[in-house]
Image (cartoon, rainbow, N blue to C red; front, top):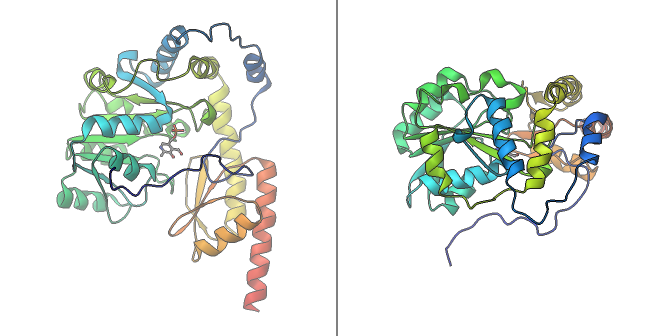
Length: 337
Ligand SMILES: Cc1ncc(COP(=O)(O)O)c(C=O)c1O
């Protein structure tokens, strides 16, 4: 056996009110619900072909590339898995900023690589870390999870010239499509972009993610995935959402409106960082204390070293959180009086 120490996920997850997983709580429009209700399942006996062909066509049109430039997998998680497996030789170095998505070190380790992190979330910090570590792969999320920070196109295009491969994980980019690196794939042959249907499209349950790159790299990566690696049922569901001319914009607008409300609520406990994602990061003096208080009141957030990350929930989640925050503020006042 390998001597690895990786997190082990529960076989059966706890249920409850989750604001720690960046799921969408945008209520489904009735017209979409109706289409989902009228789906048929007469093709369950066969491996999926037509729904996946359609998904490739639709997603390629959505992001402005050709289907040959796409790979699809079980969430963008599978795409991180593929990219690390396919590019890393044993002990090759993968660099990410601090903080960044928790799965990067895990997939790097699984692929026999070494994961290192820059000192912070600054551009200068990354430049310095590239000089120090000479990574094979620079892997970062844009917008950044957990803070929501957006790296600029200028920064990323320059970074692409400094490393053998740049992987930009755009899980939350559907909220701000103008900041995407996809239009720069043609200019940078070492650029790989990851996308997902889990966030702005609100389809975390269908587990569909994409890799977008030039067709030569896409062809290379295709060797590392089995045939029929995603479900045709998932593909059909994605096609319904991609076909709808208004859904994504409605989801973006709902998130914008709710984000303002959440910002006001969360400002009572700390400094809320600006973001255009479906989560907000609150910088706090005592993340552990606030996180424990909210968790005890069934408000599950993501605990980070300098704060908490909170998913933008619906009105019911907001109300529950406002109450929990009020209780926290009152308990602090009592302590300090
Ligand atoms: C930055 C980032 N990348 C990738 C993922 C994985 O998403 P999925 O596998 O659902 O596409 C997430 C999920 O939270 C994420 O935050």
